[in-house]
Image (cartoon, rainbow, N blue to C red; front, side, top):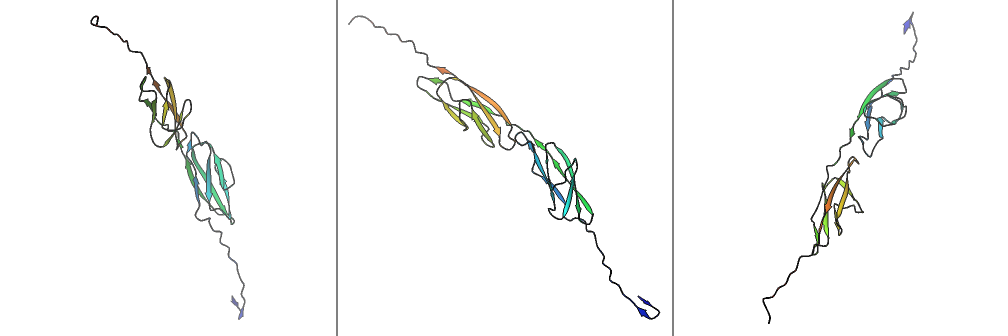
Length: 178
C-alpha cells in the first residue's frame, strides 16, 4: 500500500474451510433370517466427524431395521456433506420337496430319500444327515429342513417310506398218486 510516498505491506493468511471429499455411506445388509444386525459405514475414515440419523457419532453404526439412513460428515473447518445408504431385507425361503424310491420290500431293504432344490441350500434330515440324499432301512415319515444359504431362512418337507413285506400265499397240489 502506498500513501504519501511511503510503502507498507502485510501478510494475510487465508484459510479455506474445505468440504469433506468423497463422502459416502454403505451397509453390509440386507437383514435376513440369519442376520438381524447390519453395519452402516461412512467414508472418509479420517479427519472428520460423523452424525447419523437416529443417533450415533462413530464411523460405523449397527442397525436392526430396514430404511434409509443419512450420515453428516463434518471436516475440521466446520463444512459438512451428507450421504445416504438404504438397508433392505430378504426373508425369502426355499420351496423344498422330499421324495423316496421306495417301497421297502423283501428284496429292496433300503430306500433313498431325496430333497430338492439341489443348489443354494443346506439340508438337515430327521434322524440325522446333512446331504441332499439319505438312505434309510425303516418305514416311516422322514422330514428334511432345507435352509437357503443366502438368507438363513428354512422350510421343511416330508416323505413317507412304505413297506411291503407280505408273504405270498403258497399252494401246492398234485395230480394224483405216483
